[in-house]
Amino acid sequence: MERLERLRGEWIELPGAGLYYEPDFLKDPDILFDDLKQNAAWRQDRIRLFGREHRVPRLSAWYGDADAVYRYSGLRLEPMPWLAALADLRRRLQTHLARPFNSVLLNYYRHGGDGMGRHADDEPELGPRPLIAMISLGAVRRFVLTPRQKGMAESWRRDLANGSLLVMAGDCQRHWRHELPKTRRVVAGRISLTYRQVQAKRHGDL
Image 1 (cartoon, rainbow, N blue to C red):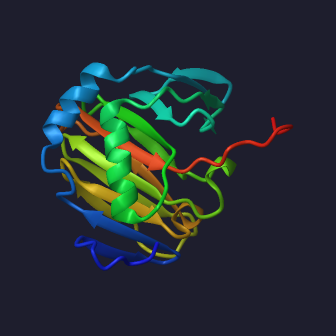
Image 2 (cartoon, rainbow, N blue to C red):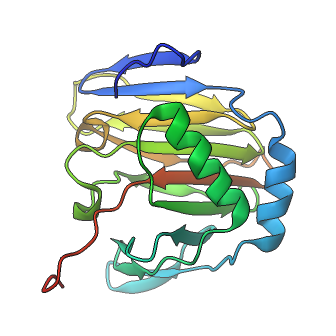
Image 3 (cartoon, helix red, strand yellow):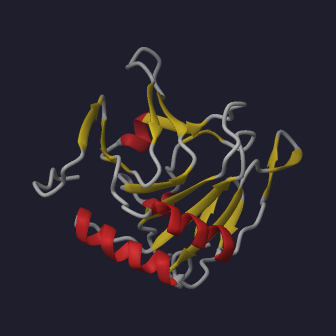
């Protein structure tokens, strides 16, 4: 991602990747949190690990353009039409970052017992060097990046503020995995919005 001069946040250089963090991107994050908590079409998916089916420890929802079909962890997500608040935020992010986004994954962590395991957003639909823009709403939770290659670097950690923007760019998904660890200390809810550009499937693709 080019270092656009108008961006006023923090640029973070990691081996093989780049991050951008803006702690106060949204001025009224609680309004958006309440809106999405009430109006998003939340669901709790089930995934199969080691031959057993498990409920994922969070609620999620997928919105986007009609052709932004996304697959991960054995799930196929058909996008729901944009909610007005999500579409408005997409337009703002596209102007702010000078990059297109055709979809957004919402994750609702209801309490500290909900979390996200270590993974990379490296699905083929996202292309070789995806840019992921994440908005955090609600409770402050710790976000962790861990290098895939041992000895490459130390893990990076940041407590993501309510209303903050974190951008993962460059080869971040190739060289790093990220997670939102569970915690006993947090009881309030958190919603994350991860905007991305999904490549549309061609006719004949499975």
